[in-house]
Length: 273
Image (cartoon, rainbow, N blue to C red):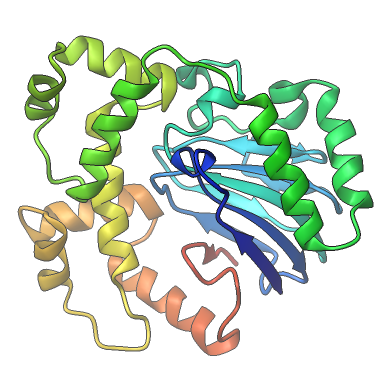
């Protein structure tokens, strides 16, 4: 598969991790997408795709930071342009409260109305992936809006990220001079989940992204380094986030590595068939 990525220029990089272009035949028709501390906007330029029980998506979708894994079914050939947002980064571009978007993929029409179709047409008409990403970056710059409480949530989220989830929510509140109720409310409005849930997601991400599928994995040591109190807690959390045990996860990652080495999608999604 062809994958082209670019980091946007400041100050957009405070909201966005990268913009990307994806094209090609997926290595597997169906994947599990474990929760990660990010949100993604997919602008679909090819055939329709399917997400779990949420339905068929033709124009694309917005996936905010999730609390559980999602099933994602690709067409035989896929082509899309997208945005990987930081957990809080999607809020300035979408007039929908995070609590209403959590674990519920939104269509591009729900996010941007009919303008989404116009943007997709302009992206499709661009001659190169680089032109597409430049066009998308310019559009994001034009659409960014002020969001009450964004600075608070961004600051707290960056502290959570810096500690890979190993941070006290009480300490975050004390540092910000707000109550736990206020901080949780702002997070649910802007990120879609509470700061405690986001911390769990960062901790899981640290664990799962440290797995080297080509090497022997010491799960006990990995769990300890990721900040889990014990291995049983780690296993329970791992199953909640991926739908499979750590050993089953490793088997799927090794299958992906053996069958499609170096594939652009082998960065978290798991074969589901």
